Amino acid sequence: MLTGTGATSDTVIVDWGVGNIGSVANAVRLAGGTAEISASPERIAVARRLILPGVASFDAAVAGIDRLGLREVLGGRVIGEGVPTLGICLGMQLLFDGSDEGGGAGFGWLSGRVRRFSPSPALRLPHMGWNTLEGARACPLLEGLPPRSRFYFVHSFHLDAADGPTVVACCDYGYRFAAVVQSGNLFGVQFHPEKSHQAGLRLIANFLSVASP
Image 1 (cartoon, rainbow, N blue to C red):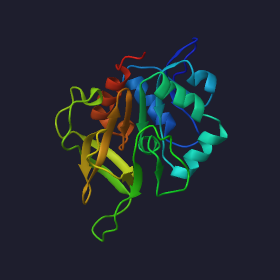
Image 2 (image 1 turned 90 degrees about the horizontal axis):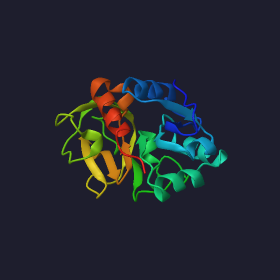
Image 3 (image 1 turned 135 degrees about the horizontal axis):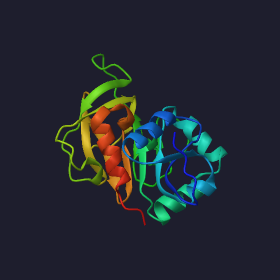
């Protein structure tokens, strides 16, 4: 982990007590950036960009966010100031209104709800392993990546719409679901770029190049 030492930090990975945070920080370093893992509102308030990780249940993440009092400062930075922000896996799901996984409220920065994969004897849950992006449209995160790039997924829930205005790319697991979303400088990926080898590092490097306000 690299920790910022100045008044501002290049990238803050928000630590609300869940997630594969060390691996994300290492991937940022390998992609050429520096990262600080922090739950401090003061550090979040001066970050040039934010990463919202997540490997846990929706309600566990919501509980951590509310216990640490992070909603207001994150909303101010992400929506008020337009700081580049990347939600990874559960972090992407938290960008939306809520989830069938629990009763807690997401950030609601993007409109939509997270649903469990429809039951099917042919589909094991969680959806785990490599899968291919489909129908990708232009997006800074995907700059320089070949069409139908493959990324590593681990999840049982997904955004309820595969064709909404914020959906950049989809994936298929029995049916299409949103794999990448964007609204301005707010991005979300349902997969784990930190586990996705060179394609994942390129995506993270692309995120690090998004201009901050």
